[in-house]
Amino acid sequence: MAAAAVIVLALGLGYLMGGHERGSEPTAFRSSEVVTGVGESSTTHLADGTVIRLGPESRLTIPRDPASREVRLDGTAFFAVASDSVAPFVVATSAGNARVLGTRFELSTRASDLRLVVVDGRVALDSGDMEVEVKGSEVSHISAGGTPTVTPVDDVWPLLAWMGGFLAFESTPLLEVGSELQERFGVNLVLDDPTLADETVTVWFGDEGIEQVATVLCRLVEASCTVEESSIVMRRTP
Image (cartoon, rainbow, N blue to C red; front, side, top):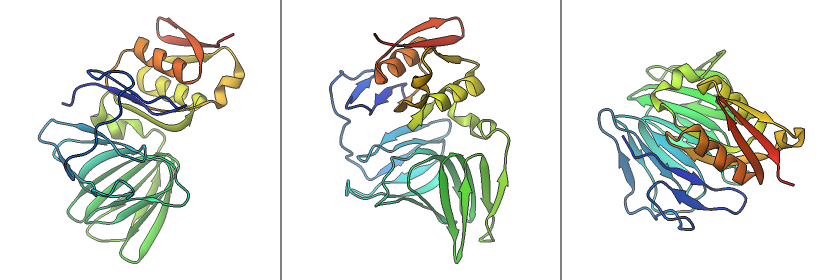
């Protein structure tokens, strides 16, 4: 299992935590592939700000050109894609391709079978000459090159249990961050000032505790936080 780490990429802050010195930049890729074995996972940070959590027994191929926004996947991965209206992000697989502007989703593929789970945003999924649009809280399947199906689900997180405590937000409003913390971990995010609800964060966490999550979230929106049992109380800094 990859070591826990936090990378913050918002509000002009860019620092690594968890074995790296604050103020340093993400290390440039030396290889075009990331491969995981049985029971392993890996987190990859692309040059455009996209964060990818690669699941066990998977392979991710990354173009050496840092301007490219297309990767190839064999296996399972969760994506928090940086928004770019000019250059959509593409995940190519043997069963079909996913094209997005900015969203969070999981893609799992083996041979000609594919599953797409969209947490939020929209993903265009194509297989051959067929294309469907999949929205947040929807799941799409492609089996043996057939027509993609789209099914709504009440809760996507049980489908993503392999990620454990991993969290990734991409330009996500704090109100949605709070809902996700509650759904996944039973932690309440209490916003003392209602104007905080629309503040957005771009950040990912490994398996950090609630205190570290609170510290980073508050730093991003320039607020103060108090951890009270299973709650994070966030207040505007005077």
